[in-house]
Image (cartoon, rainbow, N blue to C red; front, side, top):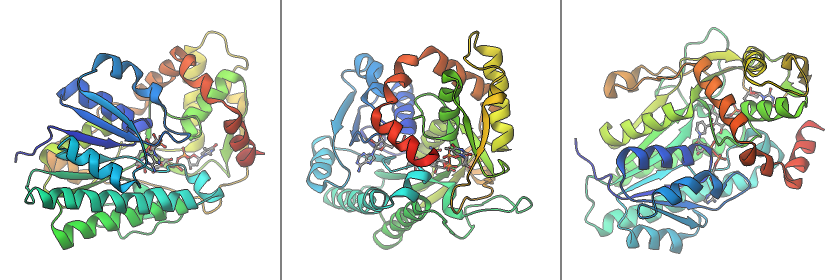
Length: 357
Ligand code: NAD
Ligand code: DAU
């Protein structure tokens, strides 16, 4: 099956996964990419800095909100976009618990605005088959598993538990409805926990790495036995690429790393790898920094993804093991203090205080 894939609009392309995807796409396909990103606290133009220098003809950055319909309309038309890859979101569960409103605004209303704009763009061109609206979503829409439950499949009913996952589930339903009702050529991927370079230090892995380098406590919620399935971010980017090229419009695919581990075991492994890699740490062994703190309200116990569909239909499977990916990630943070140190702003300290007290 052929598709357009010649002119991409990537929302949230200055965030963690979005910027990794822009990097993957430009280095693999060399076709023009427009990034639309509001540069919230999680967005960082520096994530694209070397790419803007290396691909001045192909990469255009636009600072703006996905909820700004006239802006989105003009970007679609002016650049004759054939593929929209939608990463932009409020993405941190703890922030959604502190204040859900921006999650509804960006993840639900923002996605609706993009869908409307893309639908009219598609209609205006005579509804060509090769256009694509690819919505990047999460495993959290499926809810929580017990230790013995089978992994989530694409048919698992939605049961989101946090304001974040409820907002993502809502956006997934809107995307589904635009395909079902109007025939819009959409794709949805639901992925497990990502980690890797350019990850803002509010999520478990980058926060723990930065805290180890600073000799600060490593906060583990509850009993540390919550389980997540981890995927190296470049594997996620490869999966989206494969779905864009090979999947049928209207389809949904689960993406995961086949790498389930409890938070406590994960951070133990990360500590051991850090001790082996970093010559001078303020505190060693890093495991001495592990500190149990109050649990996250409504904390999902376990996520696990059944990824047989994407493997069987499209031939994708993860290539980077958890041990390899964590080591590469640690090395990247060790090599890039110039990237993460400027992120520890007064606003970051205030957020940290609110969550960890
Ligand atoms: P992130 O928080 O690092 O980046 C989000 C980006 O979106 C930032 O650059 C931010 O500036 C931008 N943004 C936020 N609101 C915007 C708005 N209104 N208009 C334009 N831009 C806006 O997030 P991430 O971890 O890279 O996640 C990207 C997507 O992947 C999200 O949709 C998330 O739900 C999904 N996802 C994330 C993971 C994960 O483990 N991080 C796993 C599965 C799915
Ligand atoms: O599963 C995919 C999701 O993964 C994405 O949709 C989200 O955008 C992304 O943020 C992530 O959500 P999680 O809540 O799973 O990720 P986080 O890194 O915040 O937490 C991972 C686990 O670690 C979770 O069980 C909570 C726990 N945790 C987290 C933090 C920040 C701690 O024990 N201590 C912490 O300080």
